[in-house]
Image 1 (cartoon, rainbow, N blue to C red):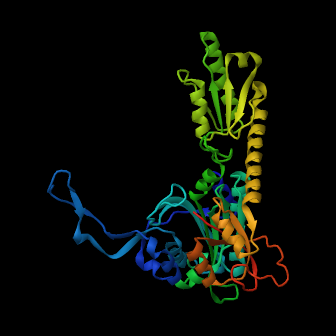
Image 2 (cartoon, rainbow, N blue to C red):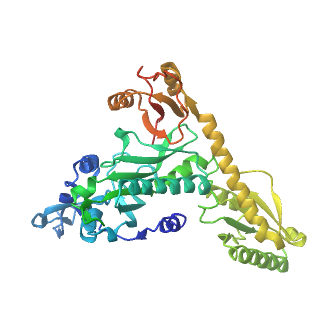
Image 3 (cartoon, rainbow, N blue to C red):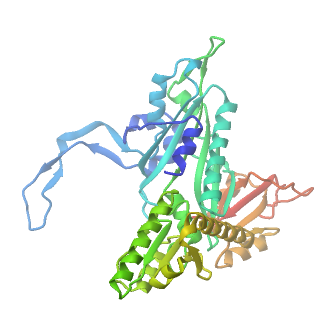
Length: 451
């Protein structure tokens, strides 16, 4: 949120908040939308409980009051398009009201039978943006602009291996005309949908009768976009960067970027000097915007503290002992590995940012290497089947010519989904045939198994 919110506001988007409970009747107004979310909705049918006598020890003391049944049930927010567009119908009447751009940071509920922490949970946190525009070009441009923001965040700040692209019709957001996506690649060769933005056309405007009076005094339906990233993005970071020793946090994301570890000294004066130096070091780094923690638990052995902070993924550890203090240095160690290095205490404000930048470049390099290692061009069905037999199948770049039914059949047969049509498309060879369907290829597509 700290990284994304300023970028959202730079696009002229204002933060808002909409209700958690949405009337079921709202969802029914957009048929494709309700069909896409119907199986994931948690439904509120009653509004109170009542006390009951304890029938047996440990038995229930409350139950749903049958007399509190709602005439119009609610769903716990799976996404907010319907309630947002209900309000937009009241707020928009003229071209002067456009564009209208709102975002909310909120929790949502989508019922999951099998959960994975961060990647697929029934309740998760996200931001969701909703915009209304006077033209289709402007709404689509908004969705593309947001995708660029997500891509910048994922690649430049979170150092993820990302492929940006467009979703197929089967994989689009329910009710969208076009869905743009950033797909993250994990070291075990699977994909994670790390963020999406949607061009919604006029579907929601028509469902909720959102019209505006144009400058030519014509009544027109508005055009829309919606977009969001969630805690799944954090899951992608954990999957992409972590190792056998624990988390590896990119410097921009880490809650603690630098941990200073003052070492135990037998001499009380030396110990006091080490602790004072650690506090001064923290003050110098905090002054330039670095997030620092001083671990001054002197009763704990250094090795145990080093392991704890490595497990938490802190990018940089600075060790400070009496001998180091005499030399005027701290010993640095990056979470990405390598030898320890000296950081002059008087130059920490310049040397520490350099070290964090070095770690960022290392993570970006590893991500680029992962893409080179686990993205494969598929030339035949045999190539495709062989990749699926591998422990780390990776992303498969295929000259695709199939239709929606072919895509569904392939998913049912192999568990592989069409993740996206990459935005960067190499020219197809003349008379290129799709190796999976035998039909003329139309464009390159990324297929993979996904979380």
